Length: 261
Ligand code: BV8
Ligand code: ZN
Image 1 (cartoon, rainbow, N blue to C red):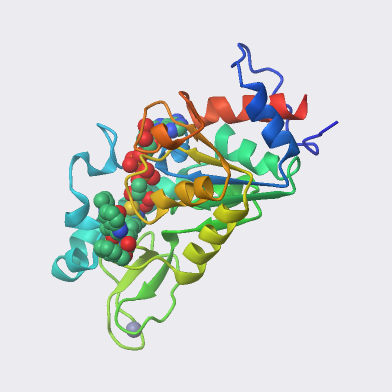
Image 2: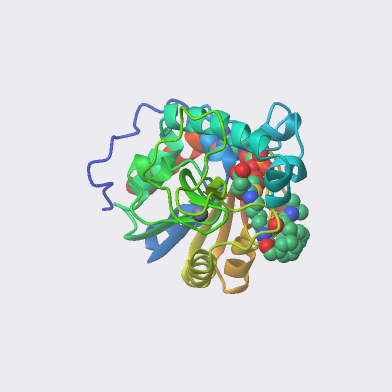
């Protein structure tokens, strides 16, 4: 009998979702599972997604903001955009979807979260093995010399900050378009995708590469691919199952179903 090791029981979940027995059995018997997550997982924590109608980029385009040329051309504008996002992230709390993914660690020992999100909410929810593919908005470094400024709280600084060592501009430690992902993070993500028995793609539009390729690497290696998203994405036709729903609703119910199986 699987237990979820004392994580809050989800029994008051009301109506049920008819999960396929194949999915429940595959998870229950899996030595390792993987969650690839995107902005949709944090939407229920009040952190805007990128491509929704009211998303972050409805007013701007990625090229204008999330790339180093934009930062070098207009550092103050890019800095202010990140300051406004930092403010939202630091006031956000994990939601039921984050907590369910953390609780899966108590059911399937080898549970890893590979996230595209930069908000740190998986770690705050208790997930112990989180790979951040696109960095973390709570960390910073100098664009000029690379000096780290992780423990400095810039939240109140409205102006772009200068490096004490070289006078260069300090930037959030996130991966911008055209920049390589942290080598160790993408290598570990691809390694885990080849090993996982079940891979969940949760809350991502599956548009940004190389993150979007992670489930496909797992598919090729024989993993069971499950998408959780209110909308279809380019991954939908490749997934074994695509569950139309929100992460905060689907994942706690799935955990309940697996624990009870
Ligand atoms: C690189 C950090 C070498 C900064 C981000 C191959 C093919 C085509 C293009 C490329 C390719 N390889 C590289 C590229 C270029 C580019 C790319 O992928 N472009 C795309 C747009 C075509 N990739 C790169 O530049 C990467 N670097 O590969 O370097 C290189 C460079 C150039 C050319 C070749 C090689 C770097 C990519 C990282 C960029 N940084 N963010 C910041 O956050 O400010 S990307 C940004 O978008 C996010 O980090 C996120 O990771 C990403 C994807 O967004 P999502 O998380 O999916 O969010 P989105 O809003 O799109 O979707 C939300 C989903 O959730 C929706 O489906 C919605 O229905 C769903 N949802 C909503 N509510 C819920 C929900 N789901 C569940 N529950 C809910 N409640
Ligand atoms: Zn510097």
